[in-house]
Length: 272
Ligand SMILES: [Fe+2]
Ligand SMILES: [Fe+2]
Image (cartoon, rainbow, N blue to C red; front, side, top):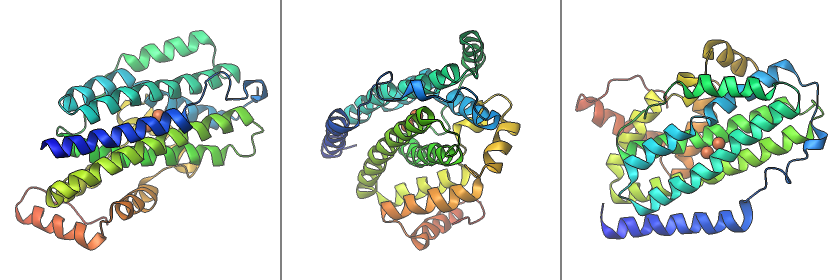
């Protein structure tokens, strides 16, 4: 990538970082009303929180593997380091809720961590462009997941969970915005390549949970049954708004798909 592209990306990172320092930082112990946690939580909510915590626990794989891929880009590498700090708080907040609500003992959490960390998450894509497309969609979807769980837990008399989920969702929106703005830079640089990457990732997208959460089939069914996330929500409430915020029309995306099909690189049904 050119020097001007990298400089613009670094400027985006600085903007992201200063905004986060000024307005978005939160304190795990002080900013969540732990004294108001519901000590008799709904069993389904506990299962969903455990699934989300499992995803957040893959931090060592996310940070090391993505950082290695983008190490030559100062903007992206520094972002990834800051992102790792923020994501580490997410697993801590979910873990604290599981323990403080009496859903899990500390020993159970340690066993759960050992099971999770015994598996490895691998990069779903292998170019910086495809990974930025993936993380743009995935961060938007993650914010939606936390907001969805907050909605499901609305009547559970648990201000601690509601506040934790609101803080996590706000961080995920911040992550989405950085990735979306970075992807917009890639689009300025080579719009066709970005559209092709968008096509590929949209058609092959899987949330990290699908590959790494133990007993995903049952947990995934529960998340679908609670209306938190499913394929339809992904298309309507993730893909469409993300494309819109990137200024990409369905028509333009189809054009790129046809070019790809003609080049015989990908042969997939149209979903958008
Ligand atoms: Fe997170
Ligand atoms: Fe995130």
